[in-house]
Image 1 (cartoon, rainbow, N blue to C red):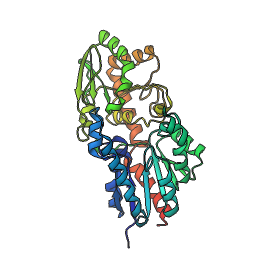
Image 2: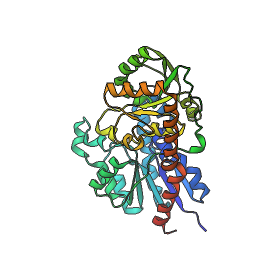
Image 3: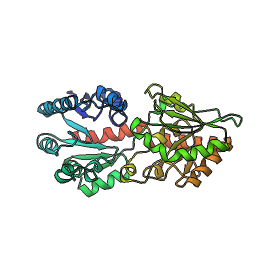
Image 4: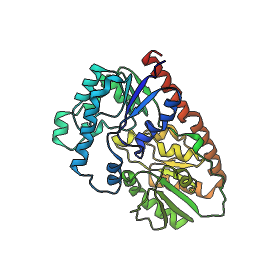
Length: 357
């Protein structure tokens, strides 16, 4: 029996969070199920490292990414199904997706509100030429995969043929549970994220300063280089894929502050899922999918105002039993709703249906 050939077109190599979680973590399962898998990332590892170091990758390097993806299009007919992460060419009209829709069948996957890069971009040419680019990509796709309901609603407005919601998930086998919730220790409040999302911590620094003045805490930043002006003790740990779980286990409380903006409403609450998989209680802004993951007062707290954040953190800092109860219920929810294998077998059934297996 000939193996079915799948071509995955993620935006980033494995180091990029969205591509790692939406594409790369599933590859061993696809291969185990007998599929022939090819992966072609748009951007390179060098590009990502340069961006994370807050430097420019250079126009020539970016141009080579476009050329490499362009030449790939000449071989797409040999694949049975093509699965695109977000778009084929960033900031170009959807001509490549139009071509693909004529010669093959493609699915497209979203875990961010990338359509706002076009319809809310402060760039005259982008606004003029392609404000609805992602809508066109969605409409031409055989199937649109999205990470949450906010993205699903946009796909519906775009006129997508078929839409499936697949949350961004974890592999529970990699996530240990934090055991120590001793009342006689300094409490560690933690945050994990990419350099591009560090900005979300800025509004919460005054809150952390107040907490520091009234409780024995430290702040753990799993990101690498810290530019936070937190008055208390802060520890920074460089992020690595192999070390992220051990880093989270050093926390006692995980946080996810977000502003109420269109882009943030499209986020998939992944760091909350990570915290909860490790049995941590969480405090998060009531934005987007955060409201689906956090059941307020049961596995964590949703906090909007300064007073709500202070109250939520204060309760968890002073009550180790509450931290333990929230952590247990949080992990229970993750194991029920946000696991890699649960996602994969749903995904596999859809692929089999598409390919007539």
